[in-house]
Length: 269
Image (cartoon, rainbow, N blue to C red):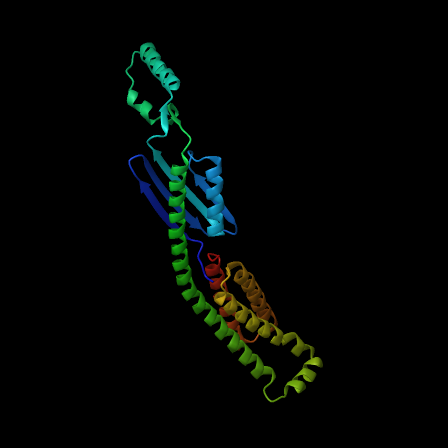
């Protein structure tokens, strides 16, 4: 299953007493990491949101911003406000200047936040769920787009493996039966050194496993990433062991296509 780790989602709610805006973004990452910004949430609601987002998104570097304007949730912090005004007046008197008192309105400290009601918390959580759903839908579409290029590069890899296999067999098995070839290679160290049949067989097996992972209903990013490391390793071995000009271009292109695959899979769950 191909699902991207990249996406974003937004959700809003507004009535006469409450305004909620949720924005969530996700980037690729080896692990799950959530950066949650909202100073009004209770510890219980924050834990609930964190658990939900991690369960739904699984992996990725996630940024979640929740903006809340609850018009019934603030009281004036009169003592703090009185101290601010007294300080302003003292500065005006001491330095004979006139200050703008409108700047006080930008100070959040003179508002005391009340505990959010359960009804308000439910509306906030609903907005979070909607934003996560939108993000996940975008992740799925992005995964489908990535899969198109991924399959193209994988097909190129398979063609290179087939060409390498054909050249190898033509080189070593031209007019011999397999058993005769085995006996010959056992007596010839140079042939043993150049024998890449085992690497070719592994490469074919790796391609089969990648296709199975693509068709699987489970998240396949980490599994395919590991298999591609093995493909790259076998490619390097072939380049080192079978140094024939007619196979060189296919071995090099196999590495190039594998690197493209690794770049694509780095963004997949």
